[in-house]
Length: 146
Image (cartoon, rainbow, N blue to C red; front, side):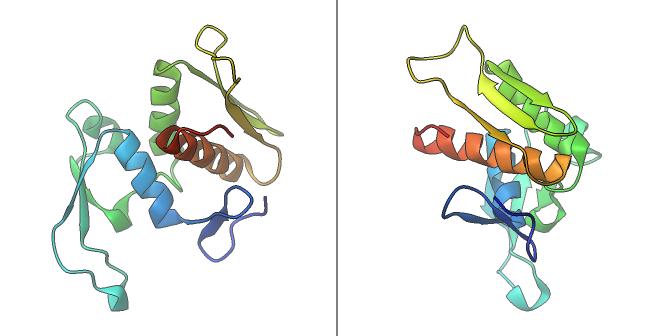
């Protein structure tokens, strides 16, 4: 896996993930509902998508319950990213993040016959964590393993 390249993340052997896609995946994982509030305007970089977070999540993000896609910060703010990690941990995953490696794996008491988890060793701490979270969420969504 290589680092951020012009606003894109490499995630997996053939997947290229934009920051907007990553933010969307995290918001949906935290229970946000999505609606097309206004027309997409690519000339000014606005998608028109609005995310409304549940009452229990919204105060942890900041002052609002509703955010535009462009204002989501899962790709740049540790406080936002930690909400995703906390939810994973509440669902039985274990996260270990230090200066050289990021590991997120299913806890032993929840592990199935196929041990599930991902780890990254390349890039900054934030980049490794984003890449790892992306793979976990993508795999939870499609039922595969890392």
